Amino acid sequence: MNLLEEHYIVEVVLEKPFKADWTKQHKDKFVEVEMIVNVHGGLSSAHKIFTVDKWKEVKEKGFYIA
Image (tube, rainbow, N blue to C red; front, side, top):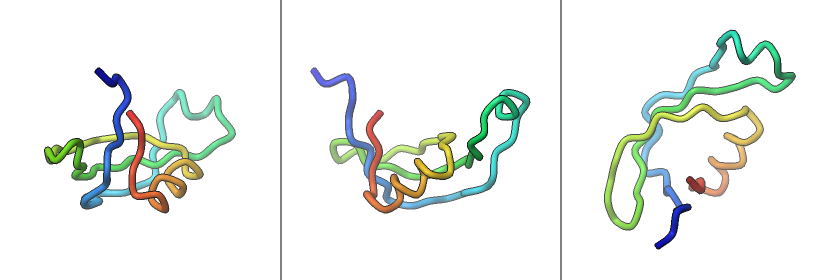
């Protein structure tokens, strides 16, 4: 049984800058993303917070591991 799986992005529903009190402690900027993902053929919605750099990487690859 795999605990980490590839989540393939089917559709990005919302992408916007994210700010919260805890983000002030970090030099990185964050983005909030709502998307439809495919995991083993099953579609589901996902709400994630990524650093801007990590989100660029995820968008280029088309998936993330979670």
